[in-house]
Amino acid sequence: MGKAVTQGKFAAAYYFYGDDDFRMNEAIRYIREKFLPFALQQSNSSRIDLNSQKFGDVRDALMALPFFGESSLVTIVNPQKLSPKQLTETQALLKVPAESRVVIFYTRAAKKPDRRSSLPKKLEIVATVVEFPKLTPIEAQNRATRAMQACEIEIEPLAARELAEMTSCDSGRLTGEIDKLIAFAAEEKKVSLQMVRQVASETTNRSVYQLVDYVLAGNTSGALEAFEPVLEGGDTPTGILYWLGASFLDIYLVKGGRKLPPYKERFRGKLERQANRLSLAQIESALSSITATEAALKGGIANGPTEGKAALHELILTLCAPQAQPRQQAQALNYR
Image 1 (tube, one colour):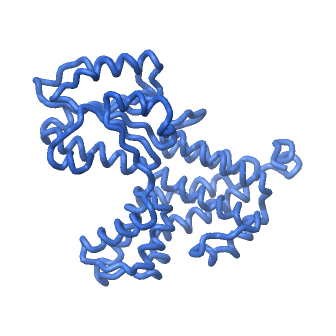
Image 2 (cartoon, helix red, strand yellow):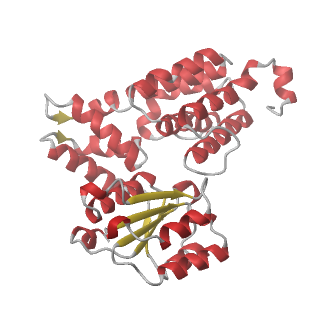
């Protein structure tokens, strides 16, 4: 797909799905910028999210002629929401492709279908299906190295590998950490292993560790204040959720007597102190709440707020609530 788009050759429709929302959104942006002249990128690009919009909006967009007969791009988010009948009608509308229009279907990572399921099979009849897995460790290391080289900065191979591990090869988090390191190494022109450990997500790690301490103490006001500096520092709500989930997962591993990733062993003492204040059931409950919040922010089914900051507030209240109760009440709430 990438080479064809670079050469100005576009399919009538695409279906993007996979584990990497960041790369999917980057691909959508890239196609929009390549397909539409700059002056039309706002007026002739529409986005329909079936989490909140109806099939009628899809039908109208696929039947409408482009504004002033110019090219148009339609992005349909969460096509898994289409009923079988609606999907059949969508296929029919796309079987006669319009040369001046590109349609992109996009399923967020939280709702990624199996490649062998019905949705990809039905869409591939009328669309080019592209899966976006997470980067492999080698791809993540190479991406970090190339980004540094573009800024005339040298990064040690071990430092690039550590950066890949720290970000779990997630391209969005990796990009954020690369940007921080480039700014930090602008004068020295070199990124070492020690620099990665000191700089990459240092503020987030410190604030999230403090946040978890407040949660364990049931200190709701302290916990709510702890993530404010992280947001102000540029980290996204989903990024904070990642680090919060990673912290509770580390506590879970320590509680169960399991090994930590090598670069986290130096934190074992702190994690053990936190793990001693929780049961395995409490840790599992916290991880479940964090996962549900992350899924909601990525477009999944939500029982609470789906806006980033509000969702984080709600999550912190949920995490703090059982810790703020006496032990007897906590047991009554099934936190045995």
